[in-house]
Length: 421
Image 1: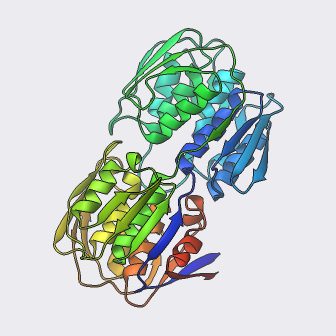
Image 2: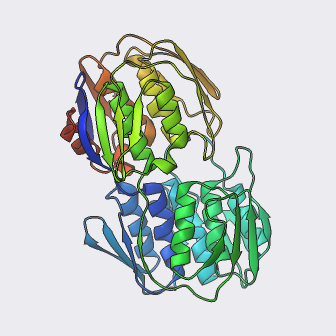
Image 3: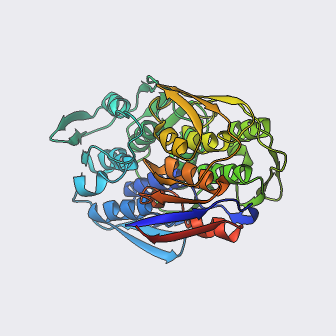
């Protein structure tokens, strides 16, 4: 077990290379099950979740080979197995991404109900609804989703849920529809950049998909998919996390390889809070030298402010001038980081779906514990801004979603050590 020791008070300045998007890489890796031809994926980050997905694919008859540090070759050699085990799937929510590809290609899937971070209830009802509309028969028994389909047929599917569209459900329905007979229309599809990236990957493999990047996807089934070489989009959440770190330390950073087009809501919120942000040659530059202003924001489905950036932005606002209101519309209980930030001197009052953040002059280093992946990042940001040393425990969450985060931050002026807990 490891922990991080974060020495606060060091301004961040320099350049950081943005990694490929974890939330794009995982479903694209899962969709390699749709073809028996080799697929080469570029920009795959070295993360615990990526390793888990490789193990799941290996279990399902695929070989995974690293051609270089961030280049992964996947090739399905056996298609007899259709069960994704509890031991692997329970490690992360995104494992459910194999359900659609298995059902589409192998006509049968048995996938353990997924695990991952504890950030609130995330049912799979929309996954089941969409797959059943395509003709699948689905039951849930003994902690497994059991799905069979002799012949999937295209249809119209509405994927609106209690909190809007579902990213993972959209991905699963899209995966199942590409080999289904006839035309499938998905209305109220998630339009996050990661879903657009999945659709573009499938098109590169020979799928017939219209409407990428919109709430309406039209898929005409094809008989088979081929292999391809494909580069994953940059990670917008990692980008936002480093932007927040620059704000919290009143520093300046150049984030190479970042995509400003995926960041509208985050950028506008940060500019309102006092940051100067611009785009330069496939990079984003941020400078934050004049203090932080309070700002209200709401976590919504894309293109709204991403729920995966809510905790990091809250950490910045703990030292803003004035009072900020943070509203969470995706996972209303996703405020477990608030109590840990309060241990560092933050003034936060939270209830279901809303938190009131009253800015304080300074935070103080403390012993804190990460509850989930993005909470880990928020506590690093707070630790960088705090006076003294912050001890961050349970960093295994962190390693699921950030590639070499302390190395990247240290190269920009931070002082973070990974030590035995």
